[in-house]
Image 1 (cartoon, one colour):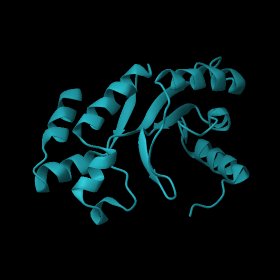
Image 2: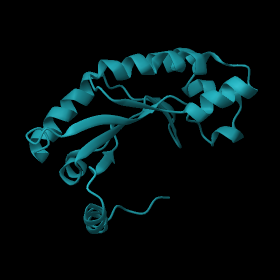
Image 3: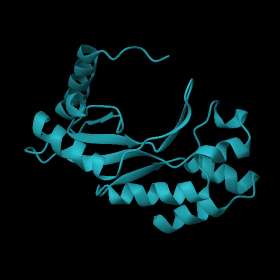
Image 4: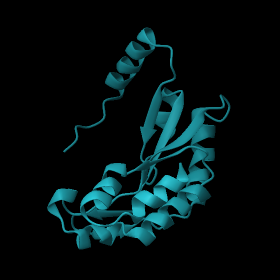
Length: 166
């Protein structure tokens, strides 16, 4: 279980880093459930996550029913509230789900179970979805999984498809 967020500690950490380094500070928030405002107020660059299919105890597999425009809507609204739009804050997708998410970590679930949340069709769909959000910078999450699929599970299609993207 993660500890509760501590805004004062985060602000102290940001101040410390800024005193040591002049590079921009990247702060992230959940794309689906975060409000983005507090994170955008603190960072020079804002990064959102983008998860499509997750597994949640008591719920099972869950697909977020959000259209790609949801992320642009949140970008505009949170940008106005936080002042991020007016300071031309860069917004990126820092973590686009491109790997399985199941009831246990990947080494402890079967490949069939992993493919319930991320098979090859879902993988391609997630990439297409992320492009339709309109963000220029999208970082995919899961390359070690694609490599494992390719090298040990006879599923090179994820790796080969991703190679064409870069």
